[in-house]
Image (cartoon, rainbow, N blue to C red; front, side, top):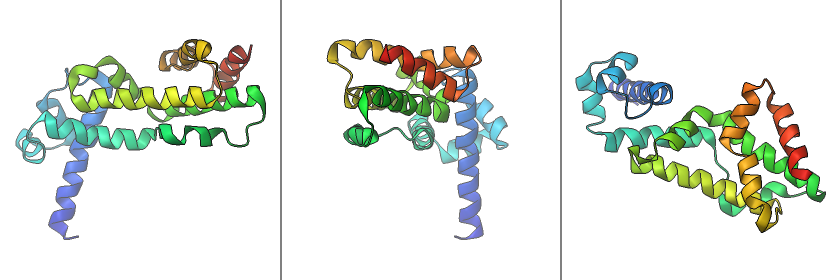
Length: 182
């Protein structure tokens, strides 16, 4: 890669990283092009040159965020439970999987949850999260009638409330696993 191409790629990445940080701090709708330029250390014109509209910028941010979050593919959910012996172990693995998603991407997932109408790529991220969690719950062997409760227990809000109460990752998994198993 030439020096020029490398500099362009670095600038583009700074803009995306600045935008992602601002979106998690203040939301998509509240983030201005001036805010992005200032955070990225570039002029507003530079932001527009790289991303002429939100239709280019938001999906670029979403792609990086979703890569970091690493949602399990719904078609591969059953494989996440290979070797799990018994109901309690399957439930624990379900909670580990869901809470692992939040450990990797809670700030971005809050934006997805809070602003699904900000851009189609944001709404798509919410649908992807929902599909992954639904597939994990089913693959864990949760009875259909109990799935809404299981989904509530592994929700981002539940994870956040447990973390706010001082539970670490392992403690949160253990607490919710025990409750779901009961």
